[in-house]
Length: 358
Image (tube, rainbow, N blue to C red):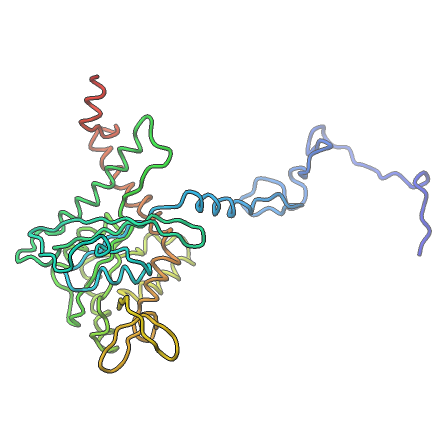
């Protein structure tokens, strides 16, 4: 080991002169001067920090806030009766969240016009609370004359945008505006194996620009695997020919990673699904399924149907994106239209006019 040179005889380093205050630090400052090393400057590239400062805790902060306040998620189900809409929704959330749980009679008569029925529940999982609202549309497609039967549904969607807009432009608005906007519309297609009905095409064409539409093939166990695949390809071709874009739309892909993931989803849609709230014993395990003469159709088995893909897509990977597209695309489109109609001013309701007169 070399000898240690006493401090008093060590040569003093030569410090080159520099202009005053350039890159100077106060004695207590933890930051390096700008322009030195890889961490300074205002370049758009990433900067290397010389120590831990805690930026990454924002994720935990957001998680805690979400757990405390919870969030809203609103799903609309559309399709004619007998396609298992309520059963599928109950299966998706493993809870009685459909309209049947609200005490509606199963033998309820078909309404003369399309009605809107909304039922809300608060679900909690892992400390996170979600207010889930299921919007059902009894009567759709069941009438003798189905002309313009999508209008009550379109009106309901726009009414929720209008309600949110009025809350947003209030001078003394609420800290947290209740969100009743429809984030997702599950459109149920009959498993005919042939082609889409004209009503299916018209509905999706008219509403695809105001709500996130996710088409699903109901009761897919009524078709063979080959029939199912051919039907899916035929549906995608008909939607493309009709200029109908379902969620996730290509123009909303933010980057190449998004595009790659969403392309795989778009190639698999519409998901061919089976819903069931009954459990059966299969190979020593309890599974949700439908009992047939030749065996049990397992709902969550990807070899039997595409329910698991729909659930993962809808809840586990794209739930937040559905909310963001609703806010940033569909609602903003409605908001801009309403403001343009009103000369750039917030919409004024009759109640607002009465209050101003007082």
